[in-house]
Image (cartoon, rainbow, N blue to C red; front, side, top):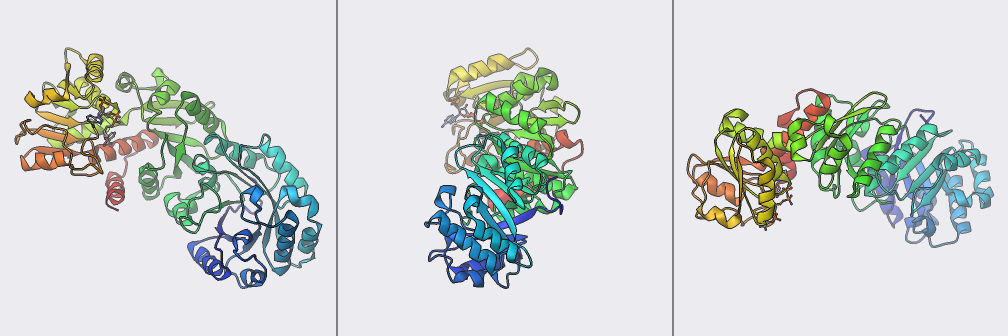
Amino acid sequence: MTEPDGKTRLIVPLVQPEPTEMRSARAAAAKAGADLVELRLDCLADGAGDALSSLLSDSPVPTLATCRTRAEGGRFAGSDAEAIELLTRAAEAGADWVDLEFRLLAGADALRQAIAARTSRPGLILSHHDWQQRPGDLPGLMGRMHQAGADVAKVAFAPAGPEDAWACFDALASAEGPAIALAMGEAGLPSRVLARAAGAWGTFASLAEGAESAPGQVTIEQMRTLYRWDAQTAATAFFGVVGCPVGHSMSPAIHNEAFAADGVDGVYVPLLVQPEQACFDRFLDAALAGPQPRLRGLSVTIPHKRHALARVGADGVDPLSRAIGAINTVAVDPGAPPTLRGCNTDYAGAIDALVEAIGCEREDLAGRSVAVLGAGGAARAIVAAVSHYGARTTVYNRTISRAEALAGQFDRPAGPVAAGGLDALEAASAEIVVNCTPIGMHPKVDADPLPESFRLSAGTVVFDTIYNPMTTRLLARAESAGCVTVSGLAMFVNQAAAQYEYWLNRPAPRDLMRQVVLEHLTG
Ligand code: NAP
């Protein structure tokens, strides 16, 4: 741990152009739970000038004065010497902390004297920013800052991938004194939200969306509610969803709320990993080798499901997931080295949603006729599962060759699979229809993947894997024909719950998870 007082500060930067607005924001940040407010003096439109004393007096929360130059991503238009002069005045006027670019230290004797002259000495943060890449030797850089007199060493940089967040955690673990290490942007998000579990001196969170002082900052509200800031400890494990893109994922909300309700000491984060296998492997290597926080489990989404299977290896995966050729869940079992297990909960989530709606067991699907629309990833998981349990399946797809390839892979005497084009649906019939295309999904909600001529009767089961909207046009039509209907929501909640159970070996709070998804979809 790098912070002698054992505390990781939640720091809210204030970037308002007017001093009165900055004072109001200061009060709002204190109310929202900030431990420290960073007065970004460079953001004040008419210069900090006379505003310093009003900004630094009677603050409800300790203050950090920063004047970031343009070279370091700030808005200060003056010279380096003018920036140092402003910080010197802030130190004299009562700032609790002052942030100075490390490269300006040689010309900052007046600032150091002002700091030393105060009875209650303000702390000095020396900081370094790199907008291109991770500095080559983070621990060495921080070491030089501490040796130069930094009370806190701070480094922020543009990462190549989330593995650079673990370079931050490594640097924090070996730092000689209090330190902040942040990877900026979406890929660097774990370095911000896991800063407490990693033992940083502080991390930054914006007061509201649009009030960020650097890319990748989440709001203080998200930090405290979504990312469980107040519950993080040095023992907190981390979980996450690996994908590209990943920002839209509902999984952090679902799993973090479930952890909170279930008393699990874990935080779940989005992990933006570029599409190649090598990027997936690089991230996993770093997360497995790194210090605290320890990786316990991953959800895996497009385009990494096959990469995850290749990485875990066939021996760590159940036969059906192996046959599907893709996994969406990885569990990390502690040990030296830790071992990986993987499975595909998409198929389990889908088939369980189906049998729950029908009111039967998986094995009761044997002999039933199933029409699967689409031949992509979702169709693959469903065809593998229903054919495994003995259903007679036909895959209908826009691109017939893909339907044929999918059917060819899972066709077996005890669960035959045939293929056809979408036009063949005109004359088709089936006891169970599963839509695995995006036809009917938001925003094109008036589309229906099933031709009008397809006979839907009271005995038919219609499963639409789409969950936005929850009642698609296809499901509405099936409901009016008296069919049993299954929405993609049940599949989505089931696959998330199965992941939770796979990682933690305890029942998932399914009702809560369903509630979180509903709130997101209707919210
Ligand atoms: P995917 O791998 O991209 O496959 C999409 C499939 O839909 C392909 O077979 C494609 O046909 C077909 N398709 C796409 N647009 C079409 C159009 N305009 N007309 C006819 N066919 C079209 O996608 P996926 O991952 O399988 O996802 C498919 C759907 O499943 C998504 O819309 C999603 O809502 C749903 N899903 C739900 C869950 C859940 O948990 N509820 C999970 C995963 C997916 P071609 O082969 O001809 O391109």
